[in-house]
Length: 304
Image 1 (cartoon, rainbow, N blue to C red):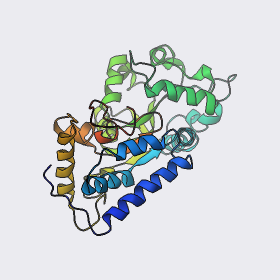
Image 2: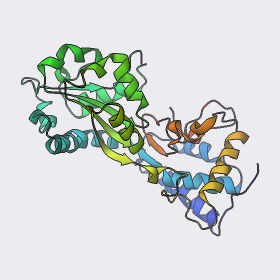
Image 3: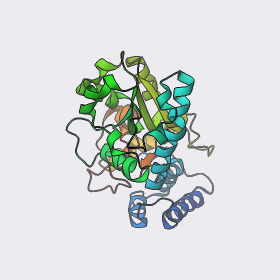
Image 4: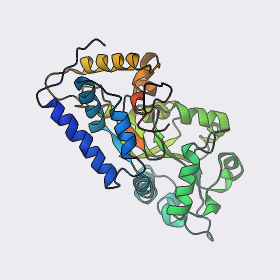
């Protein structure tokens, strides 16, 4: 491997400190659902001092959301984010107390919640899990949670539809979802709110351009400052390595370990180059070194 990436003074100490911190986060169940053995297997992918330092930088940038944190994000989405968005945007008043009204099975809140489950999606996708969290953890009445195919039947008799999703990356997936389900035809006549636990500015802007009548609200907002190889991220502040040398080193690492993604997606789908994961899944917008499972010479940290 061509090496233009160097370990700065005390870089090896920094790397071991980060690895131990991550083990502590697992041990204290802050990173619940992740096993120490899996972390250690992932770290073992990185063999040289330079590789281990690089791995530590990626882990230092990682945002991990456990199931408990995911539920907290969902609650905040419905308690604060959606009501505030509705109030500021002049959306139907029924959205302003939506968390509480959706918990009452007797009185129609005139709002329906739709987990984003694309046609034909397997039950292992995140949509069904989000639906379970809504029902079991948030106590949202099952009466008001509907499948996408029911929206057309109910939209004329309600005020708003909230499409709930865990992650908005490029926006392409939700745009395709609207097209595949035929729901895009209702945008001009209905109040559709796409509500996500985390969303990237790139995807938010893409959806707003493609669907001007669609409302988009997120709890966590990501942008270029979360891109590992972007100058705004500060991911390599050591004064020794530039963003470009780090990126070249990363590409060499992919080639050397048989991670055979081509083009800009080598830095995550849509080249968003983030390090973000939920306990239940990692977005494919995250760096593939976190989730790649198609090589015998690579142990993934997370499941896709």
